Length: 419
Image (cartoon, rainbow, N blue to C red; front, top):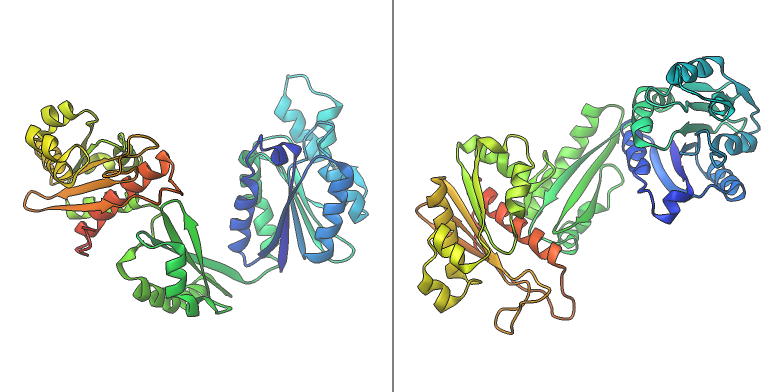
């Protein structure tokens, strides 16, 4: 079955509210084998809303609306959808009772009562968090309509507890996806490597870009999850073989999550010394639960005198090669490892921009060093083109990601630490 998601609210069109509802609904629909072919956003205008509803019902088996079920005058979803579907509204006594209980001794009136008027004969979806109930009903043409509230805190529990089980009865298949996370290769390059593997109908493979990395999503549709995973695995394995060690994980969502896990498995600890990244690497690591078991300390050593005083970077190195150099990065990694008495030390120094670059050392030049006490490896992050400069935020995040990639390659024995 094919579904369409229609998000309602002028605040979404103006950008005042970020529309996360579509992603939430689409993910849940995929778990029960329902394809989402169209998504749209429409403001609180009855004419345009009616047009969008009619179009959705003409081309999709299921219409799911989010938003516009509240008590205010611009909450028009329920009335508009019911009118298009030829369903009169009727007072639902149980929903009214729940609204009364919600407000208890607080004042409320007819505007709140409006939320208890629902399409006649519908299946009511209780709102366990707020006041506006949702509903499910079939039109005379055999199309299914689901109406959900807009706030994610209300939508999510209503969707997972009530709407999805209701829709699952209409669709026996399941859709299962697995993401192969890739760092060090761009989406275009990966797409070229696996172009022939992306031509299948079931299972499928598709590439998606993220900031500083990308992932390949492998998806299969089957009667049950186990069968879908059995269909996916041969394709996923072929993709791993093509891309090699650039695939860093399929069972975690970030490099930092993987690094914290791998450090724990290896029984090793890490410390970081950062200049241009300003502590971003340490932040990303400590964002992960369990980081306290493997992360010793992080130092932001921006000034040269602090590099000397805290990390022991030699004055001669800074004079001869400068703060942004392979030699300084090496001494930073060694110095922080020594200061923290950790197994591994990382040093990062570079020019994040937009100012501060020179012809010899342009914006985007970064050196990242990893030291394990015996060896020190350095990766050079090359500057981008002068006519298409990257933002300061992009440069810093990319540098932190490269550092994490070096650590994970070291822990997994993969090589490719330098570059």
